[in-house]
Each structure stands twice: as C-alpha cells, then as structure tokens.
Length: 281
Ligand SMILES: Nc1ncnc2c1ncn2[C@@H]1O[C@H](COP(=O)(O)OP(=O)(O)OP(=O)(O)O)[C@@H](O)[C@H]1O
Ligand SMILES: [Mg+2]
Image (cartoon, rainbow, N blue to C red):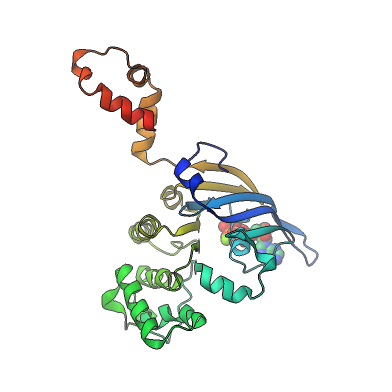
C-alpha cells in the first residue's frame, strides 16, 4: 500500500509485484547488506521510479524483482506467484518481464528487427510472426525506417528505442529498466521517457525504472527512494498542474469554494465547476 497520498485508481488494480522482507546480503567475506528488509506492493499499470544514491541497492532490487538474482531472505511474488516456486524461471521471466538496461546490449551483427525478435524464440513464435511483431514494435518506437540497420548504424537514442522494442516483444506485464537514459543527452532522454510514459498510458504496461536523474523520476507516478538498502520514502507524484490545483484547494479561496459559500459576482458562475473539480482531487 502507498504510505502517502493514495492513488485510488491504482489501488483498485491487481497487484503485479510484491516484495516481502526482501534482503540481499552479498557474501564472500564482504557481507554487504545491499538490500535490507524491503517490502513493497506494485499494482498493474503503475509507473514507478526507484531513486537513491549510488550503492543504495537500486539495481539489486530490480534484479531480484526480475528474477536475475535470488534473495538471501524474503520473497518476490509476481502476479501472486512466489518466484521461489517457479520451476522454469528463464521461461517465466521471458514471458512476463521485459528488461531495458543502461547499455542496450544489442547484438552488433544483427539488424534492429532481428534484435527485437530474439526474445520471441523463447515462445515458439513462427518466423513470420516474429518478423511482423518486430516491425510493429519498431514502428511503435518510431523506428519503422530503421528495421534493417545494424546497431552501429543507429544513434544512441535509436539503439535504446530498439532495446525498448525488444523488451516489449513478448507482451510483458512488467518492464524493468535500469538507468535506461544513463548514456543519453537531455533531449533524447526526454524522448525516451515520453515513449515509456506512452507505453504505460496506452498499453497499461507496469513500468519500474531505476534512475539517478531527477527529471526522469518525475515522469513516473510514484517514486521510491532507497538508502542503505532500505526504503527511505515512497511518494505518489502529482503532475505540475495537479500540484498547483492541490495548492489552490488548500488555499483560503479554494476552501471557500469547496464549502460552497457565497462568492463575489465575478466568481459565482464558475464556482460550481471549480467546486466539482477541487472536490475530485
Ligand atoms: N556482486 C556483488 N558482490 C558484492 N557486493 C555487491 C555486489 N553487487 C553489488 N554489491 C554492493 O551492494 C550495494 C548495492 O549495490 P547496487 O548495485 O544495488 O547499487 P545501486 O543503487 O544500483 O548503485 P548505482 O546507482 O551505482 O548503480 C553496493 O554497496 C555494492 O557495492
Ligand atoms: Mg545500479
């Protein structure tokens, strides 16, 4: 559950990711408690950013959620299924989760379309199906004209868009991204974030993005801050306009309107509409 202002639309959605007392201690004598008793719940369709200083456990948390690593104690549940009980974890991961990393990890000898097709081999899709889906996805990320380019014939932002298309290949319920804009300039970063926001909004993909970048985090609807392997804060983000409206709601005029008190003539006409709007916030 959210600790702060509740987003009721999301709370009604099913839980897709749950961590219970998740702890990861790296052994080999160093005994680093990279993640320390982290419990959180993520609902379908959320867009969540994980922030925090270097070494605070962000990648560790993401890797545990994505079943790329195993916890020392505690549990991750995806769609209610504990990962510890999944028999074929590679197959489960391939069908449920899409990954986008800071370095896009494209195979240099394969074209953009062929790179996007890779995860589909896991599902037994036919060659024709793979091709069609890869084209559709490259179109979705704005690269319809680049399907036959090799990675070194693409810009950094284009490569990252191919990586996003690849992450979506198997219609994942969840997309995990670790510093997806880490190597990109600010304009390209904004484009990539707009694309991720669009996927979240139009396709309901649950998005979990690890980032150092404040601007990137603000694209999300919820920000979890980690410190020393623990959750320091868990906040729902409001858009600028929402924040301004909330400020207005708590102002003396906003409160007067909400109470339905008599207003000066200039405001009398719009007051009912304003009251309706503020009451909904
Ligand atoms: N394989 C490992 N063996 C030992 N310690 C590790 C290992 N991987 C990570 N750590 C330690 O665990 C802690 C958390 O690491 P993690 O990679 O999760 O941090 P992060 O928040 O992603 O940092 P960054 O922002 O720099 O990527 C760090 O102190 C790190 O040194
Ligand atoms: Mg990291």
